[in-house]
Image (tube, rainbow, N blue to C red; front, top):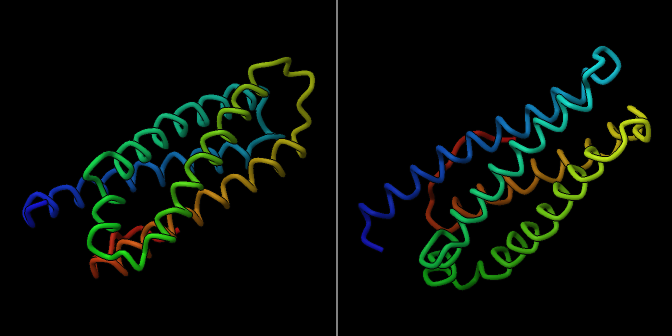
Length: 150
C-alpha cells in the first residue's frame, strides 16, 4: 500500500478507534446506573447494540484484505502471532457481545443487576485490553501512536 494511502488508512483506524472507545464507555456508563434507572435493561441493550455495530466495523477495518493486519503480517512477520491473538479476540468478543445482547432480549425478569454488572464488567475490560494490544501492535510495527489509551 502506498505510504499516503496507508497514512489515510491509519487516520481512518484512529477515528474508528475513538468511536469504539465511546461505545465501550457507553456500556460502562450504563452499568453504573443499573440500580438508579427503571429502564436499565433497555439502556444497556441499546449501548450493546451500538457496541456490536462498532466492533463489527472494527473487525472489517482491521481484517479486510490489504488492511491493517495483512499489512503488519507482510511488513513485520515477527508480529504475526500478535495479529493472530487479536483476530482470535475478534471471534470471542463478537460472540460474547452477541450472547449478552440475546440474553438481554429475553425476559427481563431473569436479570439481576449485580450479575449483569459483573458479567459485563469483564467484557468491558477484555475490550479495553484488546484496544490496548491493537494500539501496541501498530506502534511496534510502524512506530505510530494511535492515541486514546484504554
